[in-house]
Image 1 (cartoon, helix red, strand yellow):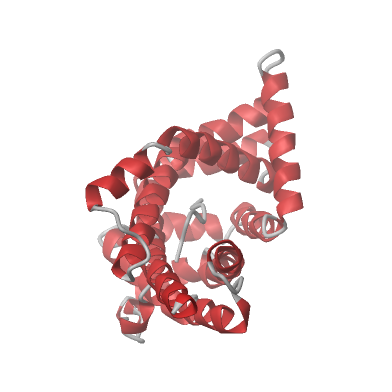
Image 2 (tube, helix red, strand yellow):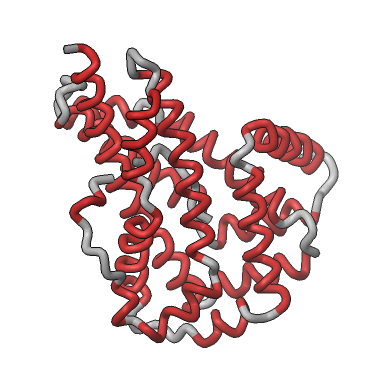
Length: 276
């Protein structure tokens, strides 16, 4: 599962026709994963994040004009173009049949629905914090008494390298955000200074990301049995499962990189306009 890290993107220059128009064999898999629903949720996360940035960084606190800018950037159709292009390129040559079989099964349908429900719940910061608190309690208890369900979720996370992949994507998105701010004249830092500043927060970013991933999947998979989680983990360890994980991260990482840069650039332009 890809975390919505910093985010933001100059999507206005992207082509309007998804690569999947020429990748019909992959459309059933993309649809089985309910990627359109996931992108809508990521858009909602981005709109909330953009609003927070306006409050924190703009003299006006944002307002309708800034909200309109953020809504244009987080265009779900354009976001889908980016994800679909890189997904198709990275997944090319992999047989989607085993994945389609799983995600069309009762367990596969349930897994996708549970992940979407958890993502929707995390739009509410109070619910996210409650999930984090629940994870801390489970983790603490697991140090004393083994918890098979907690261990199964952890094994799934490790099988997909979810913490490191999300940390890497988040740090890169942060750099792109800095670059957008600098390009717009709101930040005077060299590339090396940006990288140094971001890497100073690597440990805290990794700690927060690990907790987010565990909390999110702990909530999402709470109703799954250990056997069901193990089955999903085994799929993730297969060549097709690994290809799917790589393709998803490729698509969403590119989307976040581009959004982050454009959000930084748009914010810098807005800041300059409000201080003239």
